[in-house]
Length: 152
Image 1 (cartoon, rainbow, N blue to C red):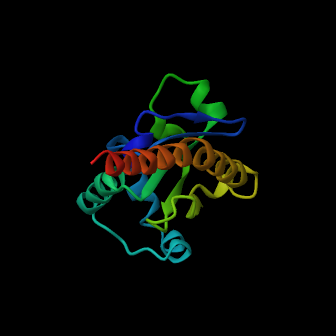
Image 2: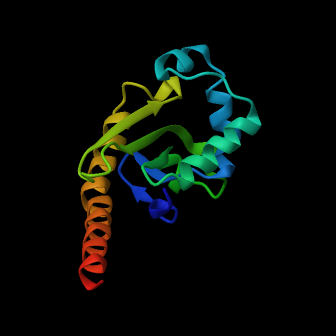
């Protein structure tokens, strides 16, 4: 979803950044795990297919994806996000007629980060982002559409 392409959300444990092509190699590495494939009901993809998937997620009007970073590692280093990646969080808008309905999926891919509150914080941050940013955006889109229709 392009609405979050320049958005960074920082919490105590996690920082959420837009899923970019720079994240694909690490994400692809995670998704080679049979355990993660089973837990996420995913099929293995080639690296090129993973890049295509990242582009489609970025352009999808109904899906908002962030990579979950370890805030402590991310804020204390000058390196790339990829070194701090622990998972991803996605929001799917499930009803085109009602922009308030959505589904959140969370994956903490790094086993050492599971059960430590990273998934909980990422989920709460995504819910807050949905309520504030996306709902406002959806309401604006709806109002603009209605206004445009009324002005015709």
